[in-house]
Length: 113
Image (cartoon, rainbow, N blue to C red; front, side, top):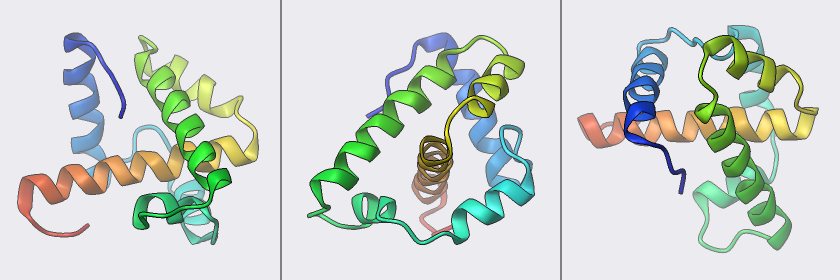
């Protein structure tokens, strides 16, 4: 679970709403397409009740990185943080972000993204 302050909620809701509408403020379209096409164990955590310990740990670390990134005060700082992640961590944050977006969309409309 990702924890944010009241002030951060409005900004995160804005970023989620933009992503739902297809305006991906944090990631460029090419990066999103590449990451979401890769087959990894990461989806096992979000889609399964019994992920491997390694996949569960990667998911937990991705949650911490996403939480840290979202707490940064500016969009430029968020992007700089993402640019400095290694490939595996970046992939985990992107996948987790889209899991958050999908869950938000599902809660608001009852439909899958």
